Length: 595
Ligand SMILES: Cc1cc2nc3c(=O)[nH]c(=O)nc-3n(C[C@H](O)[C@H](O)[C@H](O)COP(=O)(O)OP(=O)(O)OC[C@H]3O[C@@H](n4cnc5c(N)ncnc54)[C@H](O)[C@@H]3O)c2cc1C
Image (cartoon, rainbow, N blue to C red; front, side, top):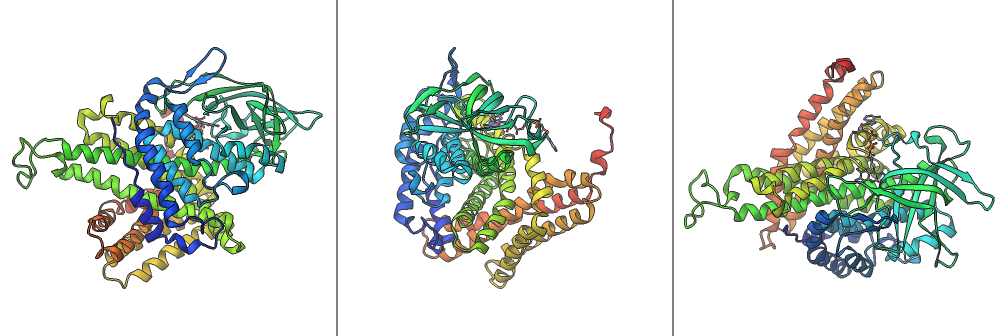
C-alpha cells in the first residue's frame, strides 16, 4: 500500500521564508493566519490525509461508486466517515469569508490542504473541492438570497456542489449546449436536458447537492452568448434552509472509467427541474468562469499532488529495492546487491520529479497569494495586477502541472519495474488517476490555446509584459550575487526564449493562426519552465539565507535540486522555441484523408 507524508515543512518554508506571507498582513484574514494557526491547520489536515485518506484510496479504487435502482449513489466504504471528519475540520471553508461560515484565511491554506487531500485520495478530495468552486461562483454572482441560502450550508458540508457543462454533443465547444430553461411565472425556470460526466453529481456524503447548470433560455441566441447559469438543488430548500421536496433531477447512470473510481462521474437528467438564475440572463458563461478558473487551479494542484505521492513512494522503493551494483563500486557491500537508488538513471527520475514538485508547489502558493490580493486588496491597481497574473498563470498551472504530473507518475512507476505495473504497490492507480487532470476542466490543448489566443494579447499584452519585467528585474538584481549567478543566468536565457517565442507569435500567427495553434502546447510548457525556474531561484535564495543555521541538510538539498533543475530541465526551453519557430507547415500539410 502506498505511503504518504504530507509535506508540511516544505509548505511552511515556502510561506514563511520564500514568500514572507507576513508582508501581506494588510489583506483581510492574513493577520489571523499567524504561524501557529497555519502550522496547526496544516498539521491536522496532513495527519488526517496520512492516516485516514491514504488507506481509503485503494479501497475507493477497487469498490468504486455504486448506483442503486432509485438513482441513489453509494460512495466506497469509509468515505462517509472521512467526509464527516473533513466537515469537522472546517477545511471546506478555510478561505470563505466568516459571514458565510468560513474562516476567511488565505487561499494558500486551502490549496495546500487540497494538495494533501488529492495526494492521499484524489477521488475523495474532489467532493469538497467541487463545493469550493460552486461556493466561489455563488459568492461572486449569486443574489444576496442565494448566497445566504446556499453558501453556509455548503461551507458546513451539509450540501455539496457540482458544475454541469458537458453534454453528449458538447464538450470543449460550449456553444453547442442544448439544455433548455423555460421561465416560470414565479421567477424560477424549468430546466430540461442531459448532462454527462458530472463529477460528484450524486452521492451519499451529504443531504443535498447544489448543481450549477449551464442552459439556454428559450429564445436565447445560439452559441455561448445565449447561455445562462442556474442553481438547481437536488432537494429544494425551504427559505429557512431546511430541506423541502425533491427536485426533478436525477442520476441516470455512473461512468465506468480508467481511474478516480471513488468519485461518482454521473449522467444527470434534468426533467423540468426547478432552477434559479445566477447572474444575468445570457451571462452564464462569465459566471461559470469563476467556478471554472477556481477548478482549473484546483486541477493543476491535482497534477502536483499525484506527482508528490508518486515521488514519495518511488524514493522509498529505490532505497529498499536491491538490484545490481553501483557503477563506481559496491555501496552496500554487506548486502547481496546495492539499493537501486545508487543508479544514476534512477536518480535522474527521482531528481526530475522532486525538482518539479517543489517548484510547482511554490508556483501554486505564489498564485494563491495573488488570488487573495486580487480579491482582498484595497488598492485597485494591486487588484488589477494580481488579476492579470491569475489570468495568465491559470492555464499554465492547469496545463503544465497536469501534463507533468502524469509524466512524473509514469516515471515513478518505472522505478518499481514490474512491481509498478501490478496492483499491490499502488503505483498503477496513481498513473490511472493522474491521467484525468490533463483532460477535464478544459483539455490541456485548450489551456494552451487559451494562453496563446486570449491571455497573451489581452489588454495590449499587459499581463505578459508585467511577468517578463518581474522575472527580468529579478535576474538582473540577483546576477551580482555569486551564489545566485549560476541559477539566474540560465533563467535569463530561458526567459529570452520565452520572449522570442512571444515575438514570433506576434509576427507569424496573426495572418496564419495555425502557427499559433501548432505552437501553443510548446509555448505553454516553455512558459511553465520559466515559471518553475523563477520559483527555483527564489527557493534557492531563501535556502542560502538559512543554510548555515540548517543542520538537517534540507536547505542544501534544495540548492542541489535547484542546480539540477537549471542544468537538466530548464534547457528544454530551447527545444520548445525551435518547435514553435518551425511553424505549422509540416503539422498541417497532409490532407485529412491521409490520416
Ligand atoms: C472523469 C471525468 C469527470 C468530469 N467532470 C466534469 C464535471 O464535473 N462537469 C462537467 O461539466 N464536465 C466534466 N467532465 C467533462 C470534461 O470537462 C470534458 O470531457 C472535457 O472538457 C473535454 O470535452 P470532450 O470530452 O467532449 O472532448 P472534445 O471537446 O470532443 O475534445 C476532444 C479533443 O479535441 C481537442 N479539441 C476540441 N476542440 C478543439 C479546438 N477548438 N482546438 C484544438 N483542439 C480542440 C480537445 O483538446 C481534446 O483533446 C468530466 C470528464 C471526465 C472524463
